[in-house]
Image (cartoon, rainbow, N blue to C red; front, top):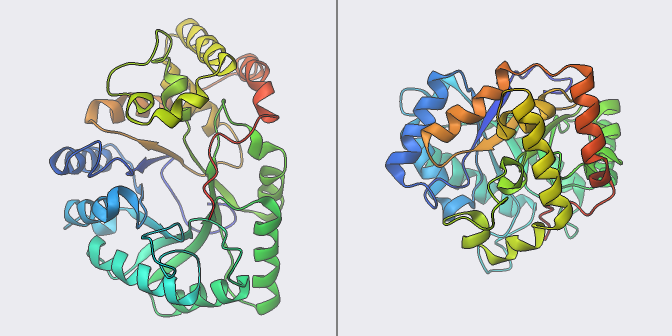
Length: 316
């Protein structure tokens, strides 16, 4: 992970569907299958499925906690109250303690601030995180959904104060969202920060499942707001990725994830799953080595997505 000593599996398990689109038993089976297949990085947050994701993970990791690198997050709204969001000392302390209880552990390996809080001084947030580390509740710290200047400011404050700094940044990054390459990724490469991409398949667009319309049970059906991403350009990219994957005798899933794994800034790719077979399909990316002509072709067909709006950016 960046310049730190923390080692992650190349594929990380995203769990925001656990307790929502995947029930408890299915979610636990996915976690156990992931661990058996060598996945050591499990990503969750205090708000996923209304806290159910953390609760399910806590149950699934009984007797297996030391086999994984566990990360959770706090900062996005966890309720409707004025104290239910942000990265103040009060909110972060409350949320971390609640997360540890649900996860049935005394520490998380990586604790990430879910988004930048414009109303809380960064030094308050960073001093609070340093306290968590000193107390043994957190091993490493990271952030998510920060703009490049916000991340650089945080790194500067940590250096000035002589305290621990962020080692990771979690952001939307895929062939259909290359906006991090404009400013964030050059910064992370320069400062030794590891990128953890979320939405690596652009919410399923890069799998090709929207080629014939909106399939039943898809994200676009359950969340009508998602349809704004189904642009002609995105669907054309999806078709081109599928055609290239067919030439390489692989799947669009594996090809899209493998492209991310070939980016030097990427530490682990977060891939969600609602069934074990989906996890196994995504794991095929680990066996796919892309040559320069293939990487060049992928760069060419997705180049326009450097200048688009981010596929996702969660802010308060």
